Length: 170
Image 1 (tube, rainbow, N blue to C red):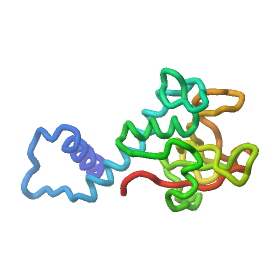
Image 2 (cartoon, rainbow, N blue to C red):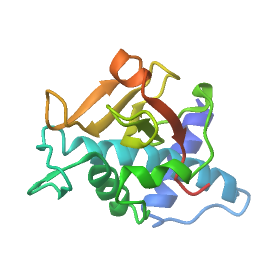
Image 3 (cartoon, rainbow, N blue to C red):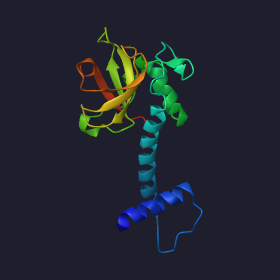
């Protein structure tokens, strides 16, 4: 119970910082960063879900006109001041591949193309982390033709999976 109250106090300090901490209470930088990274990952998903149903548009990168997969990922992370490539192919050589047990909400999934298994053709953002059974939000050019949530373990995506990367600051 004390732990929960302590976390609440830290959040109040981060969000409001309108009261003073007693001299004997110290908040370490690691505690603040740990809470901030949780907020950032959850905030990325909350923000990305605003665009569920936004139409797919090849080369699209705005909610008004529509998104393609990399346009969507780029748009979401840009809101959090994180600059990412605008084309899915550019994700091939960025980031270190994570093992499935390391997947986290907010990580980016990178896939081979639908027809060409030699080049990268799709990206999405993990919204429910569970290894190779994770779910991700992305702009789909398939039947749905919009921003949607899909399961990584479906044949369509698991067969095309290339890697998962973290692009968030540590």
